[in-house]
Image (cartoon, rainbow, N blue to C red; front, side, top):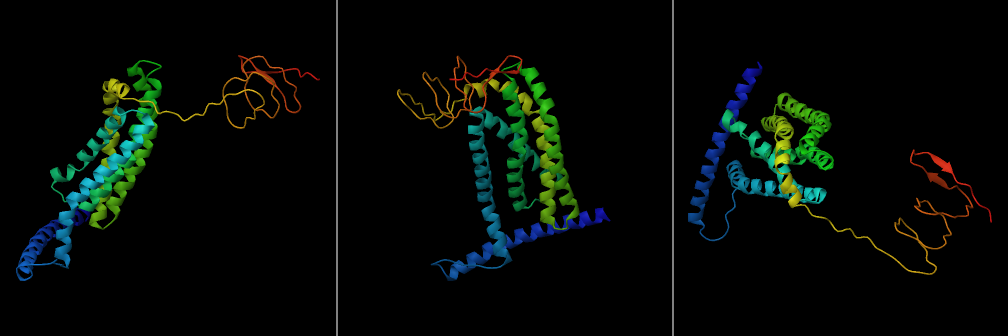
Length: 292
């Protein structure tokens, strides 16, 4: 019964595509005929044929806009997250490759694809699956300076594998269930593409991205940059009032409420609270208070 429903659905999709093509040609013919009678001014047409024709013309532009905007936003965020030009490019190449592989399946399988489904799934796949690549890249950056790059990548995969598998399985199952349980052909295409695309992204992130990071480590290091930190430095002498989180040296007497760690000689009159000394074995020893 399920196979018959799938066959009927594919047949209806083929018929809809043929009708859309015919309506697009019909819209062009009607527009050319109307232009003969109204050579000047704007022509306004209504109906299903016009809608299909407008969709066909706008898809190419919408596709470029959606892809460029989604890639640019992700690239901008990753640029300041990793403070490197090369790292965001490597991560986006992997996920974008997964998107292209995902939408090559309808072509080779001979099935139709709704243009709205392509726009929606490509955006979701770029925004959601990039997190898998970020997990691996972040962990690898933390470990590559502490051990050999190959060993660092092994530790990274061991760390990121449960997280990626759990999150990816949830999205994959959700997409495939939507594709199987709904009766709307457009939603079926979105669910199937989303589930299939997540599987492809997981495979590329776990098996392709590690090799790319190992090979492209020099590119990432050479394209890295430091973001300047806006830190105000203050100095002076005499009586000064300090209120905030500070770091530095103070030479003189202190009067007030403190919650700080002091490295050096300390001679204080403790009005309330206590002063303790931090030892190497992480044990604290109470310091005797002096009365004045």
